[in-house]
Image 1 (tube, rainbow, N blue to C red):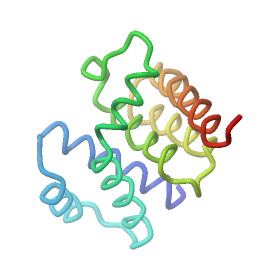
Image 2 (tube, rainbow, N blue to C red):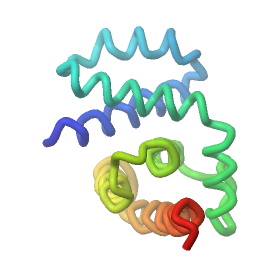
Image 3 (cartoon, rainbow, N blue to C red):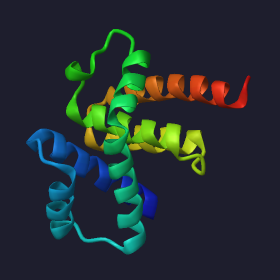
Length: 140
C-alpha cells in the first residue's frame, strides 16, 4: 500500500473516531497517534487531511449536502460521510492532487471500509463536486 493511501485510511479512522466519540481534535489525535504508528510522511499527510477537514468542516459539509441529492448528512453512514469529507477537502483545498486520484482513492477506501454500494455513492457525489469546482476554478 502506498503512503498516501495509508494516510487516507488513517485519516478516515481518526475522523470516524472523533465523530463517533465526539472528541475534540487535539485530544483525539494525541490518543490516536499513540496507538497508530507509521512513518513521518504518512502521519504528516494524514494530519493535513484531518486538520484541514476539521477546520473547513462547515463549508465541506455544505458542499457535500448540495451535491448529495436526496441525502442528508445525518442519514449517511459515518464511514461514507467521513470519506466524503476528507476527499472533498482534497478536491477543494489541495490543488497538487489530481481530482481523479482523490476520487479513485476515496472509492477504493470505501470498498474496503464500507458497504458494497458505497463506492458508487461516493464516486457520484465527488464527481459532481469535481465537475463544478474545476469548472468554476478554470472558468469553463
